[in-house]
Length: 264
Image (cartoon, rainbow, N blue to C red; front, side, top):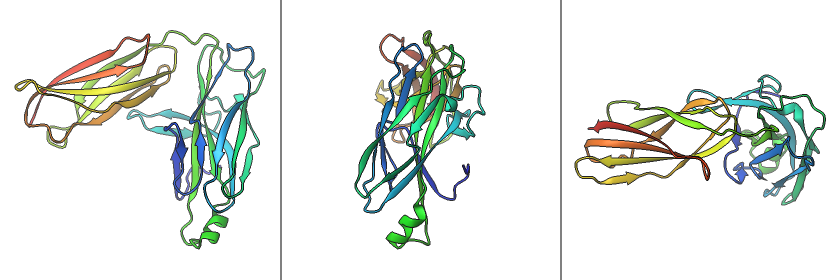
């Protein structure tokens, strides 16, 4: 597999992942649980909305987040948390006629040696392999786009407990507009957490409060990175109390951090 593509689209976060020129895949995340005595195959639903034939190749990659939360990809088996060897895709070459919808099966391979007390993860990559054929049919052979969609695969350990996450720091990225806030997140527990980060801005002179739309923050155990959010540009100058609220769902305490600063 080539790790550098001339032009590639890779979308994996939405509940319905979609490459703009090619195909749709749902769901965007698959979960297997080692504690389950009966791990049935999971289904990926693939749609080809184009008027041309589509051929996809299923492969796998390791990944982790860097210090700013961006995904970094590695060949399978590189990282200690790699889950690529734990599952298989049937079929691994998928051909869809124009407008066709079909399901493929993703199965946990039995009796694989892997840590039973740690989460294993991988990115299942579905990559278009007939992009030149599609370009010729559409008359765009001088501009070839290879479409790729990534689906998260998680293999949860037998003892998937002790979730815990913390906000370990918060700061402005610069002293002048446009302002951004860095929020440092650290998953200190032993569970995968899917959280929402909300930002609130309180003008301490007028007591006017502005809340921004929450952003998703997903963390693996021991993972730490910073999330950068934009300060609303229409805030008037003055002294502000900036509040970060990390919500990890029912049963988890809200994590809150505050920062007093002057916006000019």
